[in-house]
Image (cartoon, rainbow over all chains, first blue to last red; front, side, top):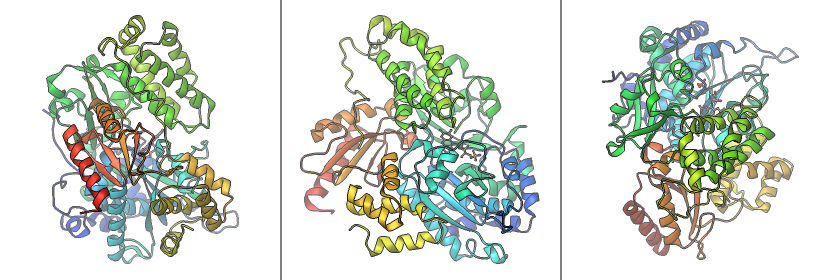
Length: 443
Length: 163
Ligand SMILES: Cc1cc2nc3c(=O)[nH]c(=O)nc-3n(C[C@H](O)[C@H](O)[C@H](O)COP(=O)(O)O)c2cc1C
Ligand code: FES
């Protein structure tokens, strides 16, 4: 049995939860009131004490990230430099769909979290970068911003203080890489979403050249509860190094897919059971525990806590909280091939290792899946991956190697069978792959 | 000319919130595409002139992002997610069904200009897979019969106008 403790989504089913009136009637914007009476330093301290770690993928401690922001940056001529706050609502990691829920049901929680964060780091502007496909969610958040502005919670003199802060929504246009924070910043500037070399880090040179702090939607949404109920309560859930609940997105071959808010260190087996088990009562084959980029776990490896450190110890990652369940009836080679095709399509192309590597890997996995692969292909995969991970401007190429290496290492027999039989053993003999995924044109 | 008074007004409103003129580019292209359906070479030149950017700056942005259509699309742009979670829930069968029904392959537009069909990557709705997006709207928890109802309804709408 998993312990169900909701700190963010307890009001999911309340009618009109997205409106400011209902949000306030449920205690919304009390954290802002409280935070405005606190010093920025004490807000940062409180968030540090909560052990909140970023929910976007890397799990970076949020309070520490905020403390990296320069206190009073200036231009060379002495004028003060503005500081910016950015919300990453690109939600592109396959298997992840929690930010969509938060923006649909609780846009004011996001806005409140952002205003508190902005106060803590001294930002004057905030940008919410939402993936372009989210037309409905964009409207939701924009409407909520208008409501908050009307109530004097955004704009000049926030809540009657002499500090001004306003928010704007910026729509992406269909590029997974724009979820990577420096690519996002370029995109926000109206450019190609190509990641930037770090350093300089966004805290020094971020959006439009200004010191910038980037956090995920869920990270911001955790801020009001931390301020309202205290860091101690948040930190009492989870582990010593990773506090609170997390919104797990469970999908694939599972009886009850959906978003589940549970303690961040819930055991993966319990999580699967909580979601009704594998679809149709089938046996489990594998789980991708943290979004497409997280190395797969085999069924023998699922007795593991889902927090960042435990999953890292298990050789994978907690990533974005996207848990994709795969049953024994599914061909792992096909799953891996599908993922690699995704990465091939989404590589921004700046770094040759990533551009070429993701292309080769996609071809190889496809070839193996349709029965045209060789033993040499299988043996080449690890070498290609070692030339990608850690060799490029951003972590995208590391992400590519997640499914590539884990699938071959843990399910090598399935790959070998494809090579030996010269066809996919999961398909009837004589099966012609209907979809050549590489042939499908994009506009 | 695609940029009309309404688009101009929207850009003026955004200008207050965005520190540089170039950052208006993505929103401007979204608005232009919403009106014209796609981004032509002329549209690129128009956007460039409007934001005082070299056309190459605009072109490189248009070609980077998959949502900007560089060819005209049908009145209904059907985009089916075939990424892993949707694949595990039968997305390929839906694509096959749509190809058969519309008589086109992915990446193509029907001769009457009504439908364009495409596969897309994860739409961040994996919990309600399989999923597709048609123009601005998501359709989730798809099955053969749900898909048929949706397409029948769109067919009627396209021949008689929205009910
Ligand atoms: C290839 C790639 C894709 C990413 N996609 C997302 C995304 O869609 N959403 C997100 O919040 N973070 C994403 N990230 C992580 C961001 O770079 C960044 O770490 C995060 O937004 C920071 O917020 P947090 O500290 O609140 O987690 C991605 C990173 C990489 C390398
Ligand atoms: S895989 Fe289809 S919506 Fe995520």
